[in-house]
Image (cartoon, rainbow, N blue to C red; front, top):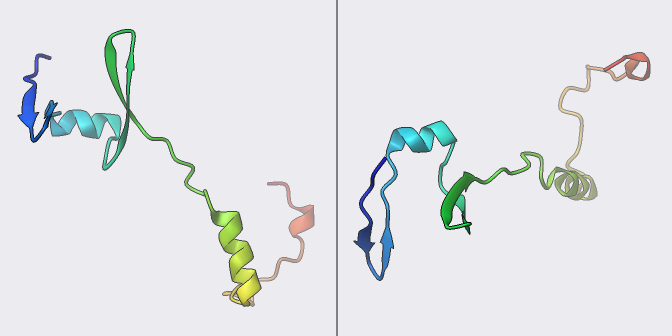
Length: 82
C-alpha cells in the first residue's frame, strides 16, 4: 500500500487506515522500531494481570480483602484437579 508522508507539526507522519489498526489490534500506544531499513509498528503486549499481587497485598494490609461471597466455601478445593 502506498501512503503519503505528511507534515505534522515539527514532525512527519503517515496516516494508518482504521481497518489496518483494527486488524493489528493497535489502540492508543504501539511499539515503533526500525530494523534493517524497515519501520515496524507492533501492538504492545501487556500482562493483563500485572500488579495484581501487589494490589492483593495492599488490600490485605488495609483489611479490605474480606470474602465477597462467604457462603461459597473453599472446602474440597485441595482435591480438585484444575
